[in-house]
Length: 169
Image (cartoon, rainbow, N blue to C red):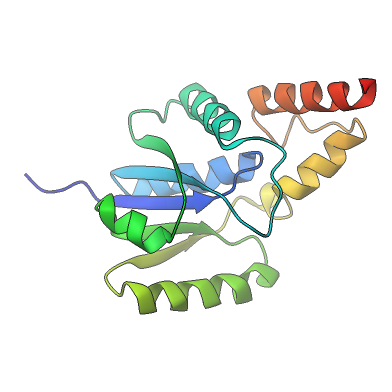
């Protein structure tokens, strides 16, 4: 029996957005198995803990019916090493705009240098998600803006809870 074609979808996902899920769904059309890898990024101070992000993503993929194809894991370290450990053949990445390309291109070249058997596959989200980022979502939610079209319902609920606690302090 052949090994399933596995891709790793790394990111901080703080929080997961519908843009992330759109890339994930597109990736499921290409790969047998996708492992979402929640990473820590020293340059970012996440709003949600890694465990909170894992729970939000698992809830979102269950409501989309993707749980048979998608796993969610927390990792720390080099993604190329972790991907190899998982038997992955590719890293799945989203490109929203030209501004993402330079950073993603540099990362892909470094990852290729570290492991030339691992491919980077870029997918573009639907037009309606090209301007979305977790940072923008958090900024809008901070001021009580309507984010229901941009995040899964469970994420919207968690953001509202997070900011209602902040206001009460």
